[in-house]
Length: 223
Image (cartoon, rainbow, N blue to C red; front, side, top):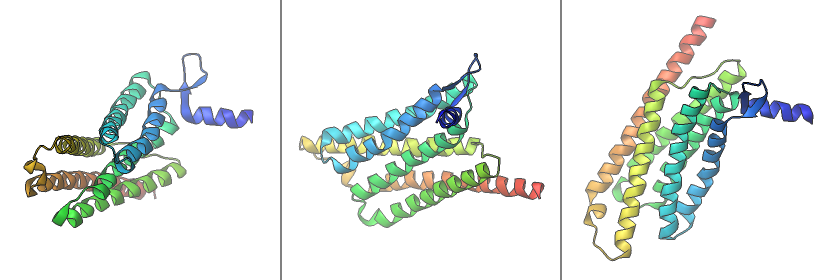
């Protein structure tokens, strides 16, 4: 039992100045982000209440902020851990995919519903594929390091989702007070959302392609 606890703490932590292993602040933030994902999904998709819908947006924004802070903390404190290397990008993927899918499930995209679905499927394939590659890399004794394109992809996706969630909140607040909102009913809004989804999909595919190229090149150099 002592050995199991030691292994778990080694996975979650990094050596401190006193050479003991402690759970790092960055990893606590990663675990918080994982816990916020189901809370976001419930508040946005299943509550049916405007107050909880707005709450879901704040939950998503807080989760996105933890993504920024935990990376800064890990680098500044020099506390890079196996748990963080795997779970931090996994938490990002779960947050992003939950955001795209719940919006698509709940909202009426009218004639653009299939188009929006295409972008989300492409994003999902990329995220699931990269997760599989990361698992294989770890099992092979190496790792996938997040690149500049990967960080840009995450920024584009989170910006898209936060903008869309806030826009939906504004629309529903105005509807609650019986204020006509043609801007949200017109084709222009749906086109804008699809353009943002498209940019998220393209950044996903480009960064995923670069990861795959790097992995194949590395494998070729090793064999």
